[in-house]
Image (cartoon, rainbow, N blue to C red; front, top):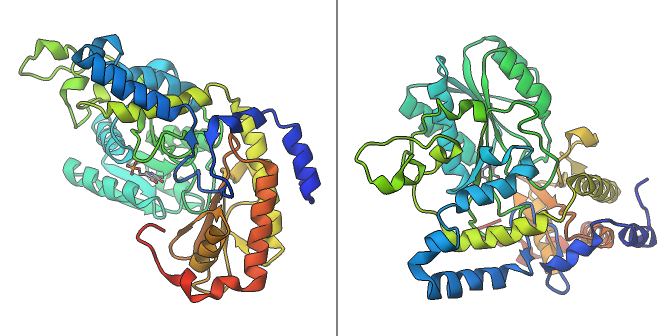
Length: 412
Ligand SMILES: Cc1ncc(COP(=O)(O)O)c(C=O)c1O
């Protein structure tokens, strides 16, 4: 039952199995943060972990830390900590580079594994996925086709049996639509197509089963729900069955079988390590590790239950002031965000700015989407209730029409 009063929300908070985790985060006074789907909040342990990395590991131990502090193996040890969050085995995930770069590696690798030359993608995907695909198909002499993956086009295109690789976002960055990973992966495989899932908006937001669903490749970023900090390194998953034949295009010395032999010829490492390229941002890795250590204390089933209850609550209050939702009402098709559209053209941006002035931080995505992310590790039900109340007041009062809310910043 969706709560209808603040008291009911407070009662849910009192019974929340995740409640204690909120204490693990720095949350500024007077702010309700609904943008953890873009940049996660700062874990309390991160500053000390990063300071230790800089002052002790780097400052005192210097070059010895490559061995003694496990720097060389960070892509693998951090990958092993990401693995349970995506339903993968620990030797199928590495951390490193960015999501865009990892996507490029997976796309070219998958094209090289197939004797076909079409990449099927979604017309509305996050732009980097489209741009990286353009680059990858250009290099590989392949072609890109784009569809709406939530319509009949997906099955029709796969049935043409010429698609080498299907690339989809598990949760759509704009609408929050959650795709059926199991069904789509199965269908693609039935037609001889490899599948790459972009997990940027689903890792830490919904339970994920990569191995259980036989997914071929996946990438995801860590600065959103995993709370690793701005620009933190991404992760890459490759199913173990593809490791031996995987020929990734950014071959570098960290992916070499024997990097300290310094041989002139490239010989890929035997496992998922072959997807690494060069040196990694180890200061950022320290922050990521602190974020992942908080996740080790969370149960994803609890996260999902709370996320759905929170988005239900917010959707119900938004509907009461006539805001249309492009986020599905059905739980099985919803990620952990709510995307709203105000019928009046151009209203989305100033409404979000008016909310930010009141301390309720969401964001805006062109052309006119107000986006609110729900992060059960550090949000309370009363926060969601209060944020929805602020939204209702901003819309009903018309305060968003003030001139100052229409000044566009570089990042929206
Ligand atoms: C779905 C999706 N894929 C990829 C990216 C880009 O990742 P990066 O800038 O870390 O390469 C984002 C960033 O928000 C995203 O939302």
